[in-house]
Amino acid sequence: MRGGTGGGGHRLGILFLTVLVDLIGFGIVLPILPLYAEGFGAQGLETGFLISVYSLVQLVMAPLWGRLSDRVGRRPILILGLLGSAVAYFIFARADSLAALFLSRIIGGIGGSTIPVAQAYIADVTPPERRAGNMGLIGAAFGLGFVIGPLLGGPVLAPLSPGEPTAPGYAAAALCLLNAVAAILWLPESRDRRAGVTTPSRFDLRAALARVARSRQILLTLATYLCITMAFSALQPTLTPLASARFGTGAREAGILFGLLGAVSAIVQGGIVRRVVPRTGELVLLRASAVPFAAGLALIGLSSETPLMFTGLVLLGVGYGGAIPSILGLLSRSVEPEQQGAVLGVGQSVGSCARVLGPAMAGYLFDLRLFLPYLAGTALIAVGAAISAGLRPPREPGG
Image (cartoon, rainbow, N blue to C red; front, side, top):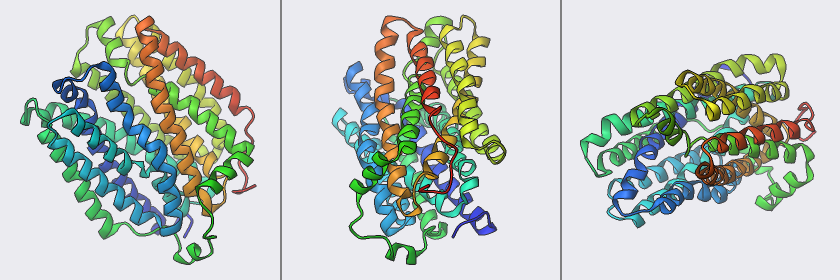
């Protein structure tokens, strides 16, 4: 079931499209969600929790989905997640209260917690030395989804139902539903059914956590991942108000800023990483990525002119695009094949925790000084780089 065969490439292509379309649906809704929350009387704190509840749900659900996929297969869990996302966006389209928006986000978090299953799918069909490069496909899907989705949701779909989430919600729901049908028809299972028979039935999430706790390599990898993701997520609630305060930009310009970041990250993760990792290895690329990552955050925080901010965003996209697939490749190569779904699920929960903590930290610091979230992000990258010094080059899983 492994290797760089044509069949593996075909499966990866279908998986990439499956994840991409799901993330386009997510990108349609996320940028306009605060506007509808304000329409239902939400204050800043409520709107912030409405954004973060999605990651809070993922914190719990991601390892559960990952472990379940180890038992029943990746394909049924991916399809179930797509159907759950479709339900969430349908509720969003019909929302007539703040409570309904919260319900849509909670269900969306449950359905959207299957990213570690997609990562485990990649690990199933990819040899270890090519795993980090192929993990970059997930990052590329994220980048493209966050470019295409907001452009559809804001300028195109939102004007079709002014002041109401109807058109964006129904469009996102339809995308996920069609995506689920396509996965049913064309996405093959990645795990050998016979392999599932040999998996001990008593193995559960606690065993995965115990496996993580026993491995210094996994713990250091997850700690580095926490720092990187917190640093990057500090950008999400602060970039638009920072650009507005310094340069008088509006929603259109904010879309361009995020689009640039997403495009650079997608190019790096989906293309450059796949060529660099076989030559350098994941660990070398991870450590090298810290330099443009930290420099980009610093330039954005200190920028007094728009060219400096654009330069910072490009550097940040390069650093983040190189770091994330390297981290995921290191994580997947530190664990036995039959435990990858569960351990990558733990990794997804670590990322979700960072996406809860990072924006909260950034929002507090932004109220003190505009540049402080970016200074804190730079410091987090320095801490992550120091932690990565304790990592060893990957050997065979479980080594």
